[in-house]
Image (cartoon, rainbow, N blue to C red; front, side, top):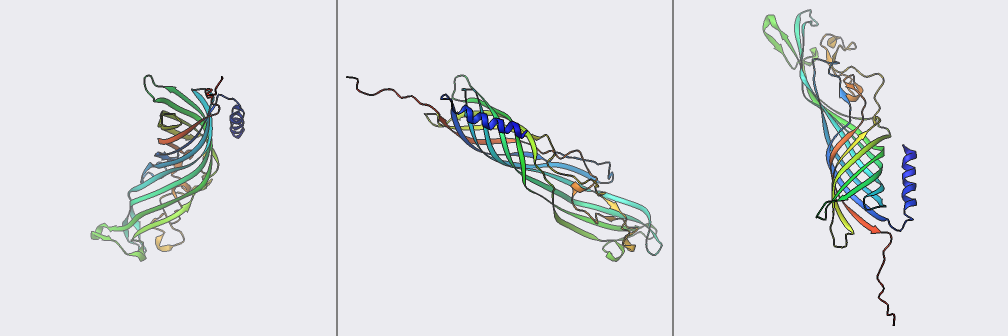
Length: 308
């Protein structure tokens, strides 16, 4: 992939020697929907309701292009892009007939409320694009599009989580429900924390389609708008080889909690658990708006000299 990007840059420089070319400097910003590309393994913890949602995507772009015919060209540039994902957990789990420290049987009830794990990844991307454009009949609008590939280099990757947990005990013979008895493992708590993601350099393909139109009479400044999509063909995040079971488990280090099924005592983020399957290959779709400044490489001027 890197070899082809280098070849593309060299080709752009070589083609510049032609007198027919039009150069262009372009800047754009965009936004839309993004995802980190992984899936949830709901079979790992069937008693938990787990939902994955994408997050907002952002991009900023600056580039240089060469149109070596009116309809086709090449371009390189630099982007900064954000990708993200959210996971929501909820539901209630019950263990019937649990024995407490006094030897009495009770039903242990644990409820997960408003649990949300949010991850984000910022990449510096180096795109190599092929430009396409064609005039729309009877107007100054042109159909515009791009296809290409890019290298993504991570510059920031982190995540945060927050949620509420409730542990309760139901003693059926006495019609008794115990809450907020922390010494016996019945309590409400809010878990709130942050963690880092293990990001790495990856490669993506992208496509754009839309329009462009001149903003001035000399057609040196053009406005353009594109629908665009990016898909990483290789994982951009590294997952642990030994994922942590997510959910309820006995805490063997605490005699009181051995039978009360502590929840997420060692939670370090959804991506380090057995709830994740598939490869984290980021994806985004959205809209970009930008301006292109076009500069012809060769201009001819009429002769105004006096021939007499």
